[in-house]
Length: 208
Ligand SMILES: N[C@@H](CCC(=O)N[C@@H](CS)C(=O)NCC(=O)O)C(=O)O
Image 1: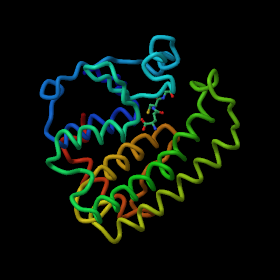
Image 2 (image 1 turned 45 degrees about the vertical axis):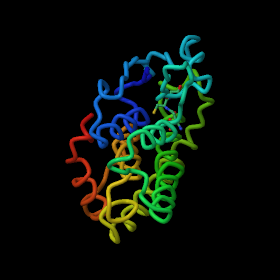
Image 3 (image 1 turned 180 degrees about the horizontal axis):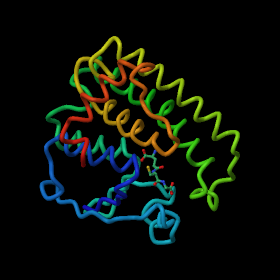
Image 4 (image 1 turned 60 degrees about the horizontal axis):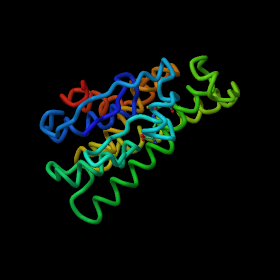
């Protein structure tokens, strides 16, 4: 298998963390890593667009040539192949709740950060019709998402409940990515988020 990856990007990191949480190395899974440099525009190059016409990382090329892109789809594939420890729930209720939280984080927190970055950073000028006001509004929306997540984490240890799950991976990767729009956790404004952040950042998978 080939994993198309870029070390500095948040979505490929989600898959690396997911595998690390399963205790799997690339050798265990039979993965060859292919680096695609987003900063050099390689995701828009003809070669990579043959792999993923949507231009996004990560992408996983299977032995039969099939390509799976979308970090959650790739994570799902590995969850099915290697069910333990479960990161996407164990029963109908926990599966649904993890999915719900993962989608909330992805559609709310992650998207507001990504949109602010894409509309505000010169790196994206060639590929996005940038609207600087939209970048600001999206950054403000990400502030609201930080508050919402702080409220949630006042009630539970991890994002989706008592156990670590893929929703924590998505949230950690989104929050670390927020550096690009100069948004960080503030211990006074977001005490519960700060508590959770220390907990999940200390996991070995957070450093892959
Ligand atoms: N929803 C996709 C997002 C993929 C995505 O936007 N990846 C970013 C890196 S974090 C990327 O490759 N951007 C470059 C591009 O869009 O060409 C996923 O979860 O995998």
